[in-house]
Structure formats: structure tokens, C-alpha cells
Length: 227
Image (cartoon, rainbow, N blue to C red):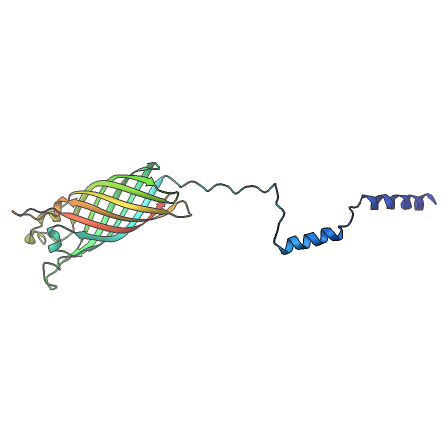
């Protein structure tokens, strides 16, 4: 019966010997000062932040909203037109994309005719081309693109013929070039763009003895999504 109390008295000092000693007054004071100064002890096992994901490359859908301005003699017929443009392409390389495009604009004949006789009409076109891109930084890029397509005014038969633009009522060859800048967002699928383009719309040249260069200028803001 006396062995059990003796065992307890023997083990208790050993258990207290294994406990770590309490911090000294100097250690407590140093910890309080470090906490007040906002100092944290570095941890060697903290992993470094992962690198940012690369810009996404693949199928690209881009939609633009802007204005189409007529520089040839067609400007004597119609005012600048609100302009919608969309293109779908595939980036073969980060610097090269092939695409197909479609466009729609709305204008009228109010420059040449009084309001009671002016005709409002849409213009539509389609085509395809290629875009070359140069990245200035990780999130900013410049591009140049060229395309070949067709463009026409969707208006009643002979409505433009009587003012000298018969060919504009049918699909005519359109050669265009465009320069732009893109700003890639934190979401690697999305980019915003700003572009300006110039085209030679053959069907919008005025018929007759006087020469005409049917140039059109477009400027737009764009939203791009890469799938």
C-alpha cells in the first residue's frame, strides 16, 4: 500500500522537469515591443506566390461600336453613320490571327435631299482577313489588320441610282485596313480595344465622267473575348 504514494511522489518531479521553463521578463518585454512595432517573424516554409497565368490564346470574338465617315463623293449624299462591326477569328500564333467579319451601318440621303424626300437605309458587308499583333507590355498590344470583303446599301431599287450611285445598291468589292490598340484585363479572356480604319469601297464610287475615290473612315471601341 505504501508503494503507490511513493511512485506518485517520484514521477511528479520528473514530469515537472520535462515542462519548458516560463519566459523570462526580458523575453516578454521583447515580444511586446516587437508586436507594437508590427514586426512579424518570417516563416521559411511560406511558399512564393504563383506566377500570373499567361494570356489566353484561341478562338476570338470581337464586337465594335463606332462611326463610319464617307470621304468620297458619297459624303455629298449621306451623313456619317453609326457603325456596328463583329469578327470571329482564330489565333494561329500569339502574333497572328485569321478572321471572318460582318458589319452594319445606318445612314440616309439627308445631305442631298430635303427631309421630306430623304431615305433612311442600312448598309451591310462581310469579309475576311488577317491580323498581326505586337505586345508592347504584358497587358498592352498594338495590331494591324487587313481584309477583303463586300459592301452594299440596302435601299429600294434605283433610289441611289438617280443621284449617281447605282453600284452602291449591289455588293461591291471593299478593301480595308485597320490599326488598333488592345488593353488586356486581369481576366485573361477579356480585352478592350480602340481602332481606326480606312477602306476603299469600290461600289460607292459615283458613276459618271468625274473621278471619285470612294474612301470610308471608321473609328470604334471594341470588346474582345478569347474562348
